[in-house]
Length: 206
Image 1 (cartoon, rainbow, N blue to C red):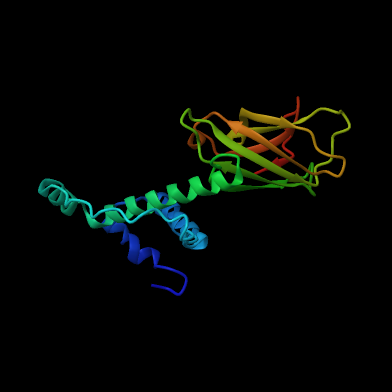
Image 2: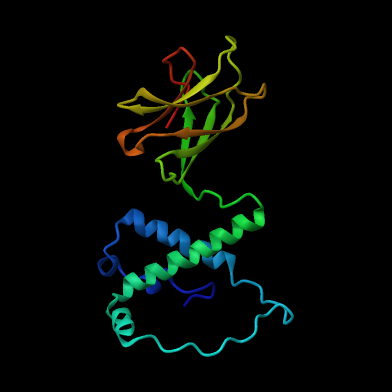
């Protein structure tokens, strides 16, 4: 155990033990780091503490046997996932706005020769049950075009725009932050571009 909390590899086990893909393992590592950062919950005041419950009856022998047959690495993963669910609920409750999306990835975008000073970041959040991928794009250095048209964010395949994720207007100083959505399977695409509406000239690319 490290001075900041239990070691991830010791807690979860090796890749061979868990059978997890690199992406799944990275997601669990992020959960582990969030739990360590959150720390233990504050202790209840003695006036709020519930009465000590009576000792629970021992579980039936068949349940004990089933629990012992559960592979240890998988049991560790279930425990981590359950703890993260409690943490996410508590954060959403305290914020007063319900559970927040966990950031899935940050995608950097750079300006092309048509907008060399422009930069952007797309935050892609976890998909909902229907398959929508909520996103938020933050842009700097991309001033409003003289045409007055909005900018558009497209998913690309082979570098060509094929799926529109949303449109936005930039502030006079060239900055903006706008929520969007991608109701597509992201694995079917290879990147994003930003263009002026009605144009196929990329201004920002991934």
